[in-house]
Amino acid sequence: MEVLAKIFGIIQQRAAKPEEGSYTNYLLAKGLDKILKKIGEEASETIIAAKNTQHGGSPAGLTGEIADLLYHLLVLLHTAGLTPQDVEQELNNRFAKGGFHGRNQQ
Image (cartoon, rainbow, N blue to C red; front, top):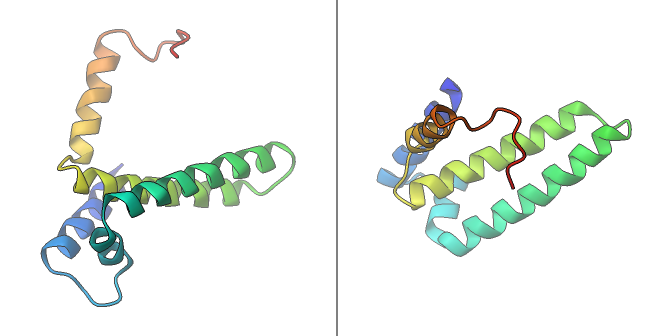
């Protein structure tokens, strides 16, 4: 998704040139533990939203929670010295090896 690359670019910019009041800079300054805590919170909220959607809740709520989770994962990627392209390459490698074809992978 092109927008993920744009958001990742903004995260990189904030890291290089912090802006006062930036949530991204807040997360980066707090460090890995805060970023991981937020990912855990957003993952839990995504699970709850998915369950709610299954029982008549708003799909927009689930979409919003997934977007929040993806953003925090992008912050983690930056912190770990990785990029969205690294994840894309890993997915391509798995696909090339026959992954994601309905096999039960746990």
